[in-house]
Image (cartoon, rainbow, N blue to C red; front, top):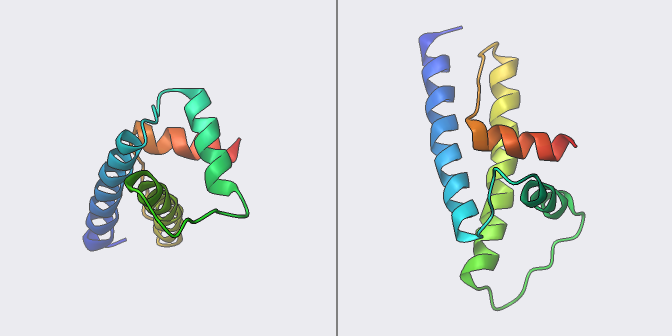
Length: 101
């Protein structure tokens, strides 16, 4: 494992966590609330996503949040493939826990 790998994945995880938290604030989702996390997981894992032609800021935030959660999972998988131990923050862990549940 190179120092670059560790630094890259740690930096990307921190950036992604910050952006995810910003989206949660926009959407008024409390990542410390199990209920909010269950609702988030249900929406993220839904097979069909309704996209309106007239997107408001909340709809855009939801769309972006789903993508960021996908990136979160990809980043974790890539780092594991390279034997880089990567840990997300508490918000990241709450989302992962809800998705696994």
